[in-house]
Amino acid sequence: MAESQTPIDPREHQTALRQLSLLRDQRVNLDKQLKVAATRNDKLVQALESARGDILRLKQAISQDLEAPMNQAQVLRVNRPVRSGASLTGDARAVAETQASLDVAMGGRTVRVPVSPVLDIDDVRIGMSVLLTETMGACAVVGYRPTGEIATVRELLDGDRVVLGTGSTTQTVALRSGLLDDVELSVGDAVAYDSASGVALEVVPKTEAEELVLEEIPTTSYADVGGLGEQIEQIRDAVELPFLHPDLYREHELSAPKGILLYGPPGNGKTLIAKAVAKSLADRVEEASGSAQNLRGYFLNIKGPELLDKFVGETERQIRAIFSRAREKASAGNPVVIFFDEMESLFRTRGAGKSSDVETTIVPQLLAEIDGVESLNNVIVIGATNREDMIDPAVLRPGRLDVKVRIDRPDRAGTAQIFGLYIREDLPLDAASVAGHDGDRAATVAAMIDAVVEDIFRRDDQRRYLDAVLADGRRIPTYWNDFLSGALIRNIVDRAKKLAIKSFLQTGVKGIAGEHLIRSARDEFDQQRDAASRADVEDWLKFLGYSVALASLERPLTGDGAPQGLAVEPTRRGAAAGRGTAS
Ligand code: ADP
Image 1 (cartoon, rainbow, N blue to C red):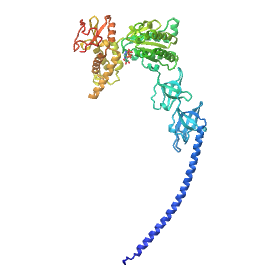
Image 2 (cartoon, rainbow, N blue to C red):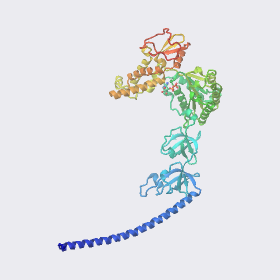
Image 3 (spheres, helix red, strand yellow):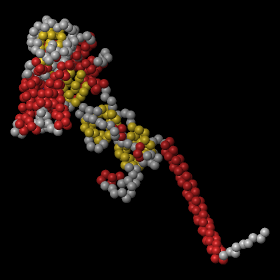
Image 4 (tube, rainbow, N blue to C red):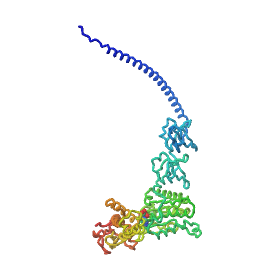
C-alpha cells in the first residue's frame, strides 16, 4: 500500500544537520574532559598510595617510640597552636609558633616540648603527667599523679594560682591542676601538692580530727561584743598581760593562766569573746613586736559532745591531735585559742558521769594536755559552759583554767549596746521617724532602741513568760527579760528587718521603724517560749538564790496570762518534767 509522503522541508533538514554536528562536537569535548579526569584520577591514586606509605611509616615509628622507655613530665602550661598571621600580643608572643607545645617540669627543669599529632591538645591539663617520646614529643596523657604532700590553702590568687601553707612556717605559690578547674577552693582546704612541679593536684578530704575541729582565723573583735565591758576587761588583764610580757611574769614568778572558763546561759557571747581573744592577741603581739609578721589568731572550736561520740580510745587520740595542731600553729608565733564548747560534757565532775571513759581516761588526758600547754606560751584554752557546777574542779585549779568569768544575760544598758551593734544608722530607716528627729539618724536609732529596751524590760502580765513551779509548791513567775540573750536580740533585729522589707513590698514605705522592733520582740519571745529549757530556768532560779528544786515549768495559768503573783499554787502535774500546761 502506497502511502503518500510529505516532502521534507529543506530548511528543517538544514537545521537538523546543524544540531547533529553540534552534538558531535560536544561529544568530542566530553571525551577530552574524560581523558583529563582519568589522568588526574591516576595521579590522585598515586598520591594516596604514597600518603598511605607515609602513614604506615609514621605508625611504625610511633609504635617503635612507644616501645622504648619513655620519660614522664608534669604539664605546667599548655600552649595551643597559634594560627600564623594572627595578631600576637602579650603572653601569646611567647608561644608564637604554629605547633602546639607544652611547658613541662622534668627532673627539676622546665622544658618546652612539642605535642605529637597523635595527642589531642584539648585532652591536656595543667598538672597531668604526659609521656615524652625519644625525640621529646608529648605523645600521651598518663593522668594526674596520685601522690603528693598535704598542704593547706592559705590564699587564692588571680588566675591559676594559690598560696599554700606547706609546713608550720613555710608558704609557697602553687599552680592549680586541671582537677581543680571546677572546684571552688576555700582557705583552709587540704590539697595534695606536688612539690617537684609546684602544682596543687587535688582536694584531700578532711580527716575526722579536722572535721571535728573547726579551725578559723577569727575577725571578731572586742568591739563586736555588746555590753560585757567589765568581763572583757577582766579577760584582757588575765590573758593579754602575761602574753605580752612573759619576761615580767617570769621575773615576778607568776605563772600565766593557761585558760579561762566562761560560764553562763547560752547565746550571750561566750564564743564571740573567745574569738575576740584570739584576734586581739594576734593584733597585740603584732603591735608589740613592731614588725609586720602578719600574725593571725587561730581559733580551734571543739564541740565537746561530738568529741565524746567516738569509739573507746578514739577520743583520746583526737585530743592529742587537737593539741598537737595547736602547737603546730603556735610554733610560728600565732596565738591559738582552743575553745571547748559545752565543756561540761568533757570535764564532768568525776563520779557524776554515766560514762566511765570520761572519768578514767578523758579528763586526766585533757588535764595532762592543759598542763603541757605551759611550754608553748601561744596557746590558750577557753572553756564555755552553762553548767559550771558540773565541771570537774580539777580543771579549775590554779595553773589550769583558773580564771572564771560569768557571762551574764544583758542588763538594760547591755541590751541597748547589743541592739546598737545590729541596728545602725546606715541601714534603711523609716523616713517619718527620721523626720521626727529633725533628720538626725543617730538620734532616730537611739530612740528606737530605747523604746524596744523599755518594752522588753517591762515586767507585766503581757510579758509574763513561764512560771517555775518549785518542788515545795511555790510558783515563781518569770518575765521576758529573765530570758533575754545576745542571740535573741540579734534575732529580734533580723526579724524586724524582714518585717521592714515585707512592709516596703506591700506599702512602698521603706525602712526599719520602732514598731517593727517591738512587734518582733513579742514574736520572738513567743516563739522562744516553746523552746525554753529547764536548764535555763534552773540557772535563773539559782542566780536568784532559790535552793529548792524546780518541779515543772508552766505557762501562766490563765489564757491571757493574767497575773498569778507568787501565790502558792501546787501544780496538778506534780513533779512532772514536762514543759507545763499550755493554755
Ligand atoms: P554562747 O557562746 O554564749 O552560747 P555566742 O557567742 O555563740 O553565745 O552567741 C551567739 C550569737 O548571738 C553571736 O554570734 C552574736 O550574733 C549574738 N550575740 C550573743 N551575745 C552577744 C553580745 N554580747 N554582743 C553581740 N552579739 C551577741
